[in-house]
Image 1: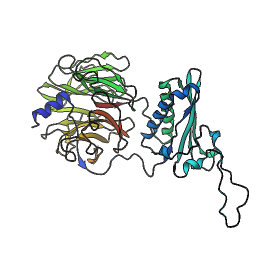
Image 2 (image 1 turned 45 degrees about the horizontal axis):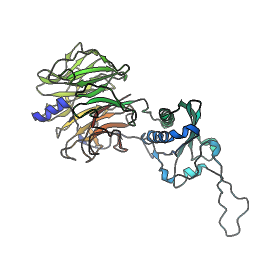
Image 3 (image 1 turned 120 degrees about the horizontal axis):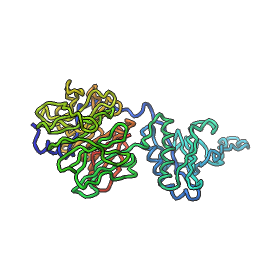
Image 4 (image 1 turned 90 degrees about the vertical axis):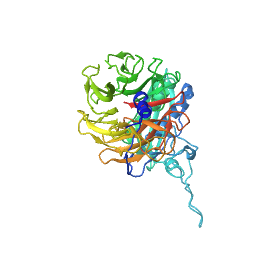
Length: 463
């Protein structure tokens, strides 16, 4: 039997939900073979565009660096001469005068920036992103290029060359940086996360209340969504990114609310009155919402139509079961957290509640399952060994039960959620001294802290 204090925290606050499995090799490969090296020197701007170049360069670098598709060449190794246009490249000239007998052959003389400045040591880049911005009326215009600097000449080096426009200002500078980075990622077979959103819970309005917020994948544009002055948590986003479901105590008892992310208005949803109603989840077709409720005594998993009608109970056991997460690829199975074996563990079953299988080992506490978009892996948090008393993030190959530990001995790490590209994970961690939102690649590298104000938790990444 799960201890009462642990189970109450799991069901009512859902702040301690986390997951586990068996040891094994890395199951998420970000790329095969040796990665290409990309150099991206700071761009300059003409006229009024120059004042926005800091935000432009920071945005472009973050988008490129966080992709996991290649390695970024350190800026400390960059040549002093940086091209802004293809015309800036100048092939080195070899002196025509023959060398004296016994003397080394004459070395090429630089006439300006050249491809080998970037492909040779110390940079050793494969690709170079360069360009410039300038004002055009009330817009900022970016001219950006991507060159393969291992080519022998500029005629064969160009991979990408394009013009981008946006309204003049910081937002416009971010937009053209995002758009340019998106086109670069496409050249490597990558998917841009521009336009996706991270929804999360924050106390920044006051520690006695928790409200829902949203932000861009790089932490920009943080905006408050709910303003109930109470506890709202466990956000879930519909597959089309148009609706937000969450738990709130606004009615006095815990209830599921559904919001339109287009209008910001609450949508009709009949939520059963119960001491526990929490952890909503949309099915992949958006036609049902799953959640956990104690309306039958024990907290069990239920399904309802988008307006709360057609309530149907799925699980029937004398223990607590929460956090249903439906496989995004098949829509025919779910993973969930159950106390069937004593401590919280991750289980799998079909949408009718049959074919129940435990995925985790039974050691420690295993919660917060989140499907990767491929429907073959889950991320979760786990207390088994490694960091006693704390949770770490793991990834499991559901078919083989092999796992990979992504975080190691750095505080309490919980609530993982996959990015739409399947290469990034957002999660909450107190490794910085307070609970904040972080992202990382699915191999545990490239950690980035996105929030700093208040306490922030329970992130979910949406298209």
